[in-house]
Image 1: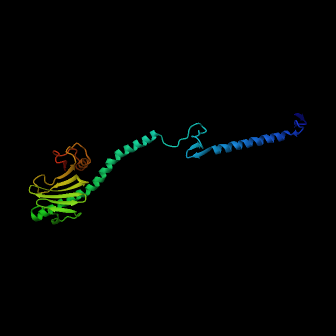
Image 2: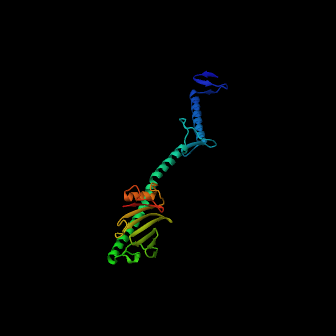
Image 3: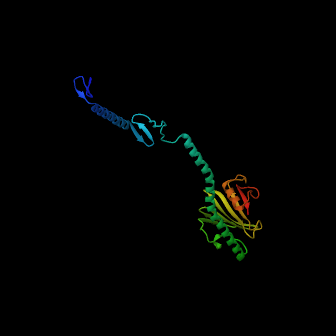
Length: 241
């Protein structure tokens, strides 16, 4: 190939200008770049936060760190631990609030029956075990058993007892947890010879007054006393107030 007047002369005598060579070279480079970009697009696809080859594993990011598509085991364990701690703190308080809401009805009915018994005593000189003889406004019992000296009235949540016995007259309403007595409010009537006008909160389910069961915690809060009064017996502990 010879150089003649600023042109390149080929082996077959054809003359090729420098500008034509530069244009063809640039066009070839641009074509190669387009092909590389197209190849890269077809090799990779984006799925969520991760980049994958069509037939292989995850692709490294341009800065060299692998993309993540989930949580690690440590992260999951930390979340479970936090949930467990929150549940341990919140669940007892929730149970206490639920039971105290139910007990407000029981406590109110106990006081209402006791007041009605005192009015009956003023009029008749004695107490009665028949709820029908008392001026009580409240929920109707589901069933009742009236004997001497005891009247027992069953409600959906538990039962109330009227005991007008000589020397130890009282009214008690018991809240049940399913089929077992849970907690009760017990009022000694004014003319009872034993502890007249005293309120009792009875926590069932334990004969150990240090067991700190849910019924015991409720009685402790209501009476503002930590220790039960007297020995625990018959599967309950009593707090006077």
